[in-house]
Amino acid sequence: MARIAHDPDVFEVFYREHVDAVQRFVARRISDPHRAADLTADVFLAAIDAAASYRPRRGAPALWLFGVARNVVNSEFRHAAREQQVNARFEGRRLLADDDIVRAQERIDAEARSRELYAALDGLTDAERAVFELSALDGLSATEAARALGIRPVTARVRLHRARHTLRTELAPQETQLITRSTEVSP
Amino acid sequence: MNAPQRFEDRLLAQLRRVVTEREESREPTHNHTGRRRLVLSGAGAALVIAIVAIAAVAVGTGNRTTGAYAIQVRPGGKVAVSIYKLGDAKALQRSLRAAGIPAVVDFEATKAGPCVVAAGMNTNPEKAGAGNEANETRHLVQSESRVPRGTTPGAGEAGENAAIQVHTSTAKGATTATISEFVVDPSRIGPHEKLYIVHDGTSILVREVGAVSCPKPASSR
Image 1: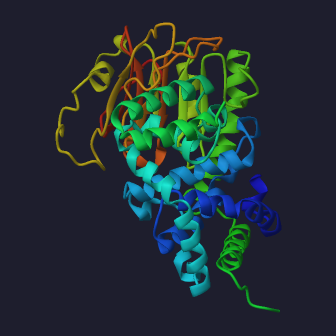
Image 2 (image 1 turned 90 degrees about the horizontal axis):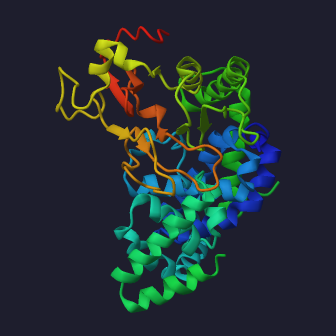
Image 3 (image 1 turned 180 degrees about the vertical axis):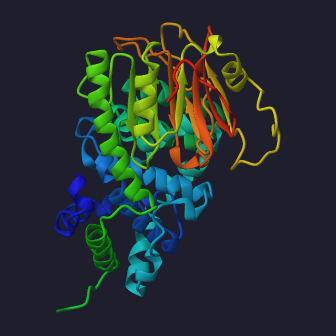
């Protein structure tokens, strides 16, 4: 994995394998195709920067990349100074053509329900939210989410449980159904 | 040769260029990338020292895990620190510094008068309350020296924007009880700041302090 940061061919294999997943990951959180393009680029730039820190025992590269992607998207949401990101070396949106925007918009439309859920998570603590997002939005199991976040599986399960509890008691019944359905996929 | 047709292709072309340029200019610069590479190799070296020094059996295969503590550099550069038992302050300090954290570790702070002041609560004497996030004590955390059995994840956590986040927890399946666990973001520690990790006799205190002089007699450098 560390080689993706040094060998363009190795990087290309990695990129082709994961670019769709990253774009969907972003579309579950962001409704603007231009911002989504920026963030997709940022996620891969962050992955290049962080490749040396990848540890196989923590899980597959895809999980690691979800962790990276979540950090990138989160810092976008928090307005954590963009210049503080190592990555803002070019803007993904400059690479968008009209056709790309149409495809991006389709992807974004398809994830509308996920974004509603994403927006409903504000009542959770950051820690709970991290696990819940990866589980309910991105379909990871609790163990996989733990790996993506670098926490222990038991910790992830407890946070997930708390998050579900909070959401069940605070959200409207319609959203609660969605949450229940989404999270039941995870073991 | 056809020009790339889709966003994904154009992005790939750009990213390939980034990787190529990285490879071509491998001399360390002040950017995070170079720093991280140095940090990782430094941490590897510190690991060898730590293992030899304390002859502890590492938990799992983690290359920065000893019987007394674990240091893990995360994607994005944050560093997760777990302290399992007191002792080996110097080894921990070395490993933290190798991981890019200007740390002062002192588990005998009670014997070092001024250090207790530096490490105590609400004692940033000169500029307390300045509210300048860049220079001042941004976040003060205290984690219990003894964590009850069972799990209390999330207790005492700070916001992700703080330089230090604390997760005081004990995993049921863990072979060792974690005394203190926290995450440090080295990029948020200012050039003249240090991270003090001290034990005041009852608890481990973790604090990030700017320009506080501490004689640190127990673990000087």
